[in-house]
Amino acid sequence: MGLGNISGANLGPLIIDEAYDGVSDSTKAIASGQNVNDQAALSIIAGQLRGDMAVNRQGIRNANDAISMVQTFDAASGSINSNLRQMARLAMQAGTDTFSGEQQAAIEAEFNELAAEINRVAGNTRFNGNNLLGGEGTEISVSLGTGEDITVVSGDLGLDISGLDLAGDPGGALVAIQENIRQVSEYRGYLGGQMNRLSEAVSVMETGIENAMAVESGISDTNIAMEVAAHASSRIRTETAIAMQSQVNVIHQTAVQLLM
Image (cartoon, rainbow, N blue to C red; front, top):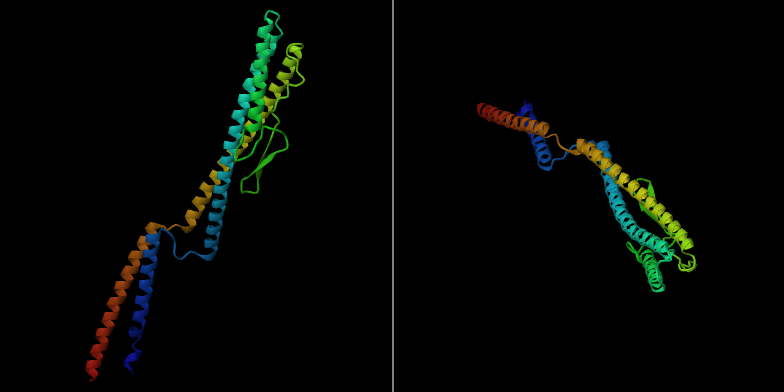
């Protein structure tokens, strides 16, 4: 019988290699914080979850930019509304006969200046080059990355006072200004509603990211306690296998000496 047929001599290195592999895998898992032996299906799911999180993060950025835009135009609308109310007050003053001609002229001059300021704000307010107050027809679509878009539509908040006669018909001018106040208030309500929709979308996407992170973490992250235990077990197996191999080598050498 040849000495090379002793089973322990062949089996020992295999056991040692396997034990070293176990130590290596558990060490990598503990060091990196991620499993090194993920099943393919779980790895695919984890990758999809990371992709979903990236899409939601971009959707949140888009929505927050849109919220800033809406806030900008709402502030401008508030300024227009304030000037319109001042114009309504002037129209009421113009209907009072107690003012002198010079005072009436001053009222009309202030009335016209306020109208010009309203048109300046409506025409020049911009957010990244977009204007939502200078005329109808502009639509800004906000992509949320979840198959849903929120569109913000422009309004016409400019003011045409060419047909108003503050001196001859202050009552008619007052009615016209009050109608403009109603339209501006209505559009501000619309902007507020779109802002709420965008804020709610951000909240939903943030929740989606949190949930996806929890699931992805459960799939990908290392169970440290289990890996430490596996690491210790693999080290014991390695040390045992080395001891066994050393014993086999001693037996092998003794047998050789006896046969000589």
